[in-house]
Amino acid sequence: MRAGELRMKTLTGCGDAASLRSAINELCAEYGKVAYIDVLTMAEAERRWALCLLRLESAAQEQALMRALNVQRFGEDLVMIVDLARQPAAGAP
Image (cartoon, rainbow, N blue to C red; front, side):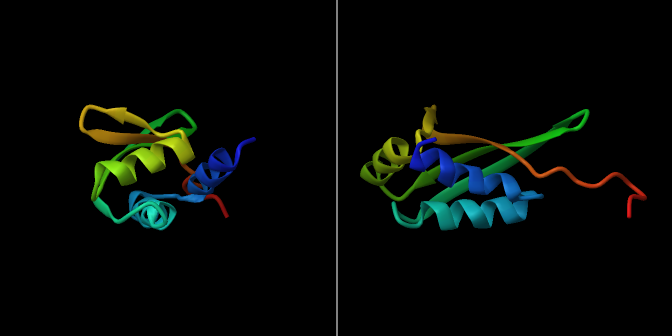
């Protein structure tokens, strides 16, 4: 597993959009400041994931992030798809 993939895996421990936003800001900090972020969460059966759209302050910062973490572009935004931590079933101890 490449270093970028390992760093992206750290996002999978997030259980909600707020913690994921914070983790993405931290992950992206070495490439530049996140200027925009939108996190859309989805769930299906027992799987939960998030579609994260973001922009950094400059195109050069975005290119560095794309190379290092294998992030793709979706229109004007960078896109990350993150598997989220499972939430315990209602009533589970």
